[in-house]
Structures are given as structure tokens and as C-alpha cells.
Length: 432
Image (tube, rainbow, N blue to C red; front, side, top):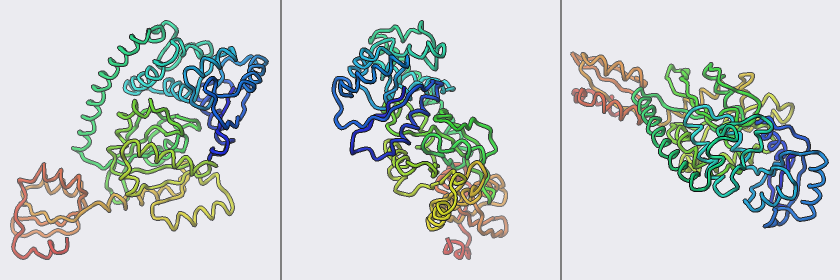
């Protein structure tokens, strides 16, 4: 049973859309939905969130339908959860627990599994032990906690705290390893473009379309949990690294925001963010606000103010005048493209926009090198755009466009090879 709960008069989201999302979250871990109901709640009750009359009414329905798990699409305190379980005689989980279940079932990498376990233990610490055994009857053990014999299920709070400490130490090592990988990429170096967006907005489908990869891309919530990176060649021949990241969701558990900060470092470290939106969704505008809110939590407010590229995805689901209005609107916005990751419509224009944005940060430099410094010259051709070249005697003078990262890297690698500009090359410098 799914019970989306809204505070009366304050819910900006479409209730039916929120119900659909809650059902999608439950189905993501293969729960069978036997009943759903939308509840308008004006004043949350401390004891059980809902009023006693509504609790009793739902208890009769739950007993009649033989419901084993009731999902309340809201945040429940430990007391509220216990009281509802006592009244309804079934397992009750809230939105946070449901999302943690999904992450636990889907995480594949060691880092992802550690982060999910950390988030789950932090959430579980304030609740009854064995609070995660409800799904074992339905799918024989799940996600990161396994079966009923798993140590953390039977552990007391002291053991949970000790396990949290150990996981954090392990995550520190994983984070250092990821940092070494990022440093290795910086030595290449290629700009990193990260796809961000609400869950099921089509990020993985777009990632596959642009890179030719075959990562999991399904029409379900949280199909992607572990970051994936692939090379992408832009129309000019310039190479970038495209990163597919975990999708965001409204009311994202604070435990997950903190625990997945290492995974989301790919977003923090990215040179450019592309916000993929499901423009066909009735709550697309609210989903956009949710994504921007999480990005601000990651201290990326300046990046947002600097402008994100918005890829308005799933236009193939929009028809008639609505489609024309959308196209007219995006045509007037230099930071938006309406696309379909499924059909490929607009994807070429999106890639061109990505290249234009990356070029905005480039600056023109005059570089004078000895003609024998072939490695340095080749590096500039590979990582920058050579606008002009002048060969004189045994010197090569290049006017080259470099982004700040590559300019700094060139100075680090070949700074000692640079020569003073010869007399008469002032034209190059003045044109920079």
C-alpha cells in the first residue's frame, strides 16, 4: 500500500504525479502494489502523523487486503513508525527508508555499497533493530544487508556506531583512490562534462546516445547509482569526458546527501554541468528546483548562477502546439536545447552547445618554443586550438586558445621550454 501524504494547502506538486513517483519507487524494488491513497494532511500528528480516525480506517483496509508493507511517502519519526506498525499490524516504511532500500539493491561498486550501508546505519541507529527484515519475506534478502543473520541487523547501537566508524575509514580510502583517478584524468587532461538531473529524466539514455556506451538505461527510478565516465569527441575534434551520475529526487534523505558526497564529487569536479530534464513530466519545474537545491547543498551555487546547460529531454512525448511552444521557447534561450535521447532529435545541437560553452573559458596565449620541442608543440595541438602559427629560424611561435586548466598544465609540463617572443611578433600578442 502506498500512502502519499501532503500538507493541505502547501503542496506545490501535482498529487497524482507524486503518487506516481511513490509507486515507481516501490516498484523499483519489486514490491507488489495492492492499494494506493492520497491523503491531504493539514496538521501532522506527533503520535502517528495521521489522525486516529484515519489510522483506524486504514487499519481495516490493510487487514482486509492482507497488506504486508505500508509505504508512507513522508518522513516518519521513530515513534510515528512504531505506532503505525502497532495499529496496522504490518511493516511501515517512510520515504527515506524506501529510497535507502532502492540504493541498497542497486549499488554495484564497493564505494556505492559502503555509502549506502553508512546511510542506512545512520538512519537505523535511531530506530528499532531488525527494522530492515520486512522485505526478506518477499525477495529473500536484499541489497547491502543480506539475510536475517547479517551482523548489523542484530547489532545494538554500540555495534552500529562501531560499524559506522569502520565504514567511514574505508570510505576515506575509497575517496583517496577516486582522487588519484581524477588526478590521472587531469594529467591527460580532458574537460569533464557531468550529466545531472532528476531520477528517470533520461540521463543514461542520453549518455549512451552521445558516447555509444551500453550502460543500463531503463524506464525506472534510480536505474543508475554508480557514476560512469566515457570519452566524447566534439565536432571540432576536441575530446571531453562525459559523466553519468545518480539521479536526484525530491526530499532526498539527508543521510544520502552526506553519504554520497564522494560519488557526487564527479559533479563537483566537473568543468560543465548539463541538467537533463524530463520536460514531459507534469512536475518538471518542481523537479528542476529539487535538482538545483541538491547542487546548492554541494556548494555549487556559483556554478548554477554561472549558468547550466539545460537539456529538455523526452520531447518525443510532446505533440502539437505544446511541442511548437517548447521549441520556440528554447530557441530564444542560448542555454537550452530541446532533445529526445531516444530518437536523437536535438542531440547534435546539444553537443555543439557543450562545445561553445567550453570554449567560452578559453584564453588566447602566445607561445614561443624551439622547433626541436616537438612534444610541447604536439601537446598544444592536442589540447588547445592553434589559431595562428609562425615559424622563424629555429623558433615556432603559436597563438593558441587554451582553457585555464590546460594552460596551467602546459606551464607545469613545458614551462621551462618557453622562449621569449622574438622582436616583431607583437602582432600576435596584441591580437590575443
